[in-house]
Structure formats: C-alpha cells, structure tokens
Image 1 (cartoon, rainbow, N blue to C red):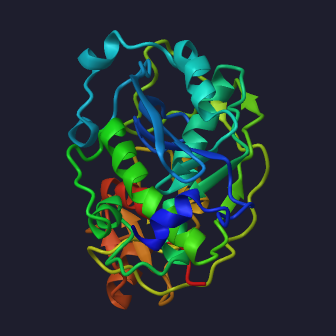
Image 2 (cartoon, rainbow, N blue to C red):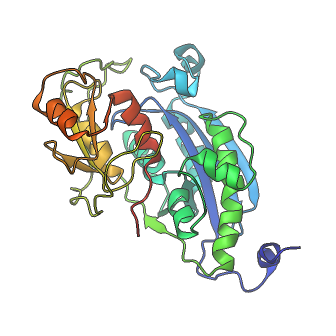
Length: 326
C-alpha cells in the first residue's frame, strides 16, 4: 500500500479540502454565449476522489448541433433527446453541494450557467476546480495541458475522446491521483468561485455570417452579469503550432467570422487571453479566415512572422488554454 493509499483513510486528510466533487464534461454546439449543451456527464466523487456514481444524458439544443465531426452527435440523434429544462433538476441534484471539477473548467461552468439561466434557474455550484490548474500546481511533467496528456500520465485509457461520458470518466480517474498527490504534498487546491449569470436580454439578434438561428427562432442575446477586467496575465510570447494557447497571449482578429466577432473575443477574454485591436511584434496570434487578404493586420502579421490560424482552429484551441506562468 502506498502513502497515497494510506492517506485515503488517514485522519491527516486535509480538513480544508471539499467534502465531495462532481467531475463534469459537456459537449456543445460551439463556444459562443448562445451556443447550447448537447450532452452532459457527471461522475460524483467522495472527499478522497472515489467514484460514487455516474450519469449521462443527451440534450436537444433546439438548433444545429455544430461540429459533428468532433462530438459525433447529429440532429437525428438529438431530435428525441430531452430539452435542458427537462434534465435541469437531475443535473442540479448531482452538482449540489459539490465542487465542480472539469478540464478547462471555466468553459464547462459557463455553458452550464447559461443553460440554467435560460431555464430561469440557478445551478447549485459554489466553487469549481480546473484540472489544468491543479496539474500546474503539482508541477506534473506533461508535454501540454490536453486531457489526453493528463490521462496518459496516470495510465488512464481514453476510449471515446469528445464523448461526454468517457471524457468525464477519464478525468475522474486522473483527478483522484492528482487529488491524493495534492493532499500528500499539502498543496492548496486551486478553487475558484462560480458566479451565476443573472442577466438575460431579449433583444433582436444581430445578423451573423454563417450563423444558424435556433430551430424555434429564439432571439435572446447573452450578456455577462458583470464587466470583466483587463487581462491580468503577462504576455508569454508567440503561439507555437501543435502547442496550446497560454493565458496572457495577445490575439488579434481580422476579417469575417462565422461566430459574431464580439462573442468570439469574449470567449478569448474569458479563457485568459488578451484581445488586441492591432498587430505588432508583440502579437502572439492572428485569427483570420482569409490569410491571403491584404488587410493591414494580415500584411503586418506576415511582415512580423506572426502565427496565423483560422477561426475553426482557434475555437478548438480555446478549449485547452494553458494557465499563465506563476
């Protein structure tokens, strides 16, 4: 029996640690404020990270399912699924009184908070824990902060990447040894407060290039419950291909985007990135769907050697943003 196993039942388990966790993964139609959850999974864990039970559901998003090539959920599959208000009570029961644990937890939490706000309810979540941040606290020797890298570090086998139930299982299995390592090393868990969204504006939606409205023609637009401060993280430098974005990176946008530009910029800010209005030698990345255009930003990006990616690649990178250097 290892020291970590001994800690499971020892009276020395940190008293300040939470009494239970809800390891969550949601798949969505996209990354914008009005995108929807299409599947959700929860693994409930006790104080030491042992699995108590698990739950999974599909959710009818009432709109186009988004990147089917990633999550595999088509409109036909989702047509007969329950609406979010129909599963909200069961979902809430599995979150209640627990710390929400997710990989890039800000994304999962905000998608969940928006769904509950739509349903005129509040998710019973007070705190969240991001396993990316925990991995950094533990100084795990990971090549990047992808879930697959965390899983490989602990010998956890992924079976269906981007399937909510399997992603939640993998994360639960990787979280337990991380939690025990933190307890053994006296590491303070990187818990953050969960603030529910409180404002819904029922105003006409701005026309969007490539945007597909909801099946029921809904026109609500989301606004955050409070203004966000300027990016608090230092610029870590340029984006490197095949590596994750890092908080503090300066990102500029050029040209038309399928997701409303303001919403796309909001997602970048929420992920901890700095949205720049122009391109300079300090710019980490330019996002454009037309890299051959002669806009001032693309011309400057070429002259400075600034990395360029399209919108689709950027939205995927947003799901795995590495924490800023401590």
